[in-house]
Image (tube, rainbow, N blue to C red; front, side, top):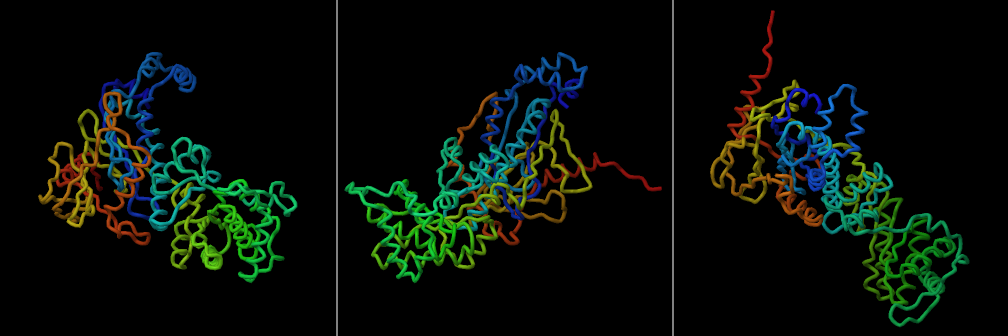
Length: 519
């Protein structure tokens, strides 16, 4: 297509493109915009190298003039201007997340990369934000999805944008290194099953954390297991000695970070008993266990059973901290699972979520599009029998209008030559395609959503850190009413156009729509 533009002499044409989506994902009524930083990195590095040009000469059809390849070799994004809303902001259908203006051929060549950098990032951040909302503020969320992600690149992106969306950490060590995301995780079932009995333990001694006195941790754990069996009315004959050996081994390796998987054999009859015995043995040596992970079974029941067990042991041994041991749950968890667990009164402190988070199983693509809206200062419109696919032409600005309660009321699109809405002044807001849907709004606060992020060949804004973007997500969500954010039948957020833009759209529509003929 770039060659066809060049062949037609359109090298100096100036175009404006909008990057937007048409429908919010996951049957919700908001989307989190993400991926802007990566888009700007791409803009900084946009050019065709000598090897790129050589490849294109072989990949493109024969007969393309050498001058075109010379033209490509000189292309950069220095003449492009990129406007965008802030990364981490809530966004809505038809509002351009990014507006790109510049030489037609260049801004057209940017299309696919900008779309791929925004589509998955925004989908992932939105999915993570929804999990954060249903889990609540006091539950930790860990991303465990690398092994289920669409390749290593998808896994890294999932770790990054789930953190932006509100997750607290990841099991992806490389993501921790690259993005400074807290790395969290536990051992696998394989670690437990690699031990068959206590005779396999080659290291049994652990020094006291403060005094340095060494004691046999296995011997201590066996003593406590006998006491706990009576307290909890569990037979030690039913518990796995291989599991006990694995836990003792792991505790010796990580005495300050002892988190054990307790469902390898049986949570009630083996896992909990062995974990608590080892945790009490660690306590004698000056260490505090962290908690347990449950990866199968009835998570609500088992979490309540575990918490009750910890509380009984806390009271019996006068260890206040024991009642507050962390309970982590995993096992194919999705939004509906968490909502159900909430209704059942679970005692889980942390969810480890993988497959449903990183693959976005409920909706695997956001569906962002990149459409020309202006060329050489002339507006362009794409028509369709499906009104949802009709574009809103022209170079536009967007404003968010707030009500007296501090919540966002409506997003308003205007032509760039219109005066922006003012606080306390009545503004007519219209549905872009339904004539009867209109309302006056008197805003108490007006927020201009666009900033220039790229101009004159450089990034023009100080880029926020990952933690600052993460904080912006939560602050931005607070500006929405609760009914916009609920999981069941949320209220649609209103996106409107000014009266001027409404008339402009429909005049252009009539000018471009063919007139039928009846016979």
